[in-house]
Length: 166
Image 1 (tube, rainbow, N blue to C red):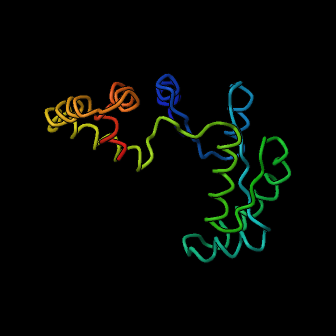
Image 2: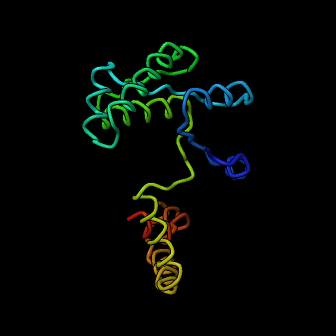
């Protein structure tokens, strides 16, 4: 299992924590914790589950039968969860889980997108290496303004932001 201390530390940092746990463990968590999103991930059917387990070639028939028996007991408990997602294939299951996370507002908005990260890098480079040119550019724009409209635009011109967003 996942140590409770780790979960609490991550939650204090403002991070979401995903636990991949069996039904017994999930029941305990759901009974003890108030602010939990629960998703029951299930196979399309038991035949498909058996095919997948056998395809991995990691368990003997006795263990496969035990896992199928356990699934027969656990699947009826799916209604204890907020969401039930059929794991028909990995890509679809991931997409459905992602949709649930978006719906619940649990996507990590602190993680910058690739575009945002590139913008941060460009901003850092501009500030570290090109501020002399940026300041001169702003000065020249203001000096070269010919009429009142251009002067108003020049007054509000932010060369640094313009260059970064370019």
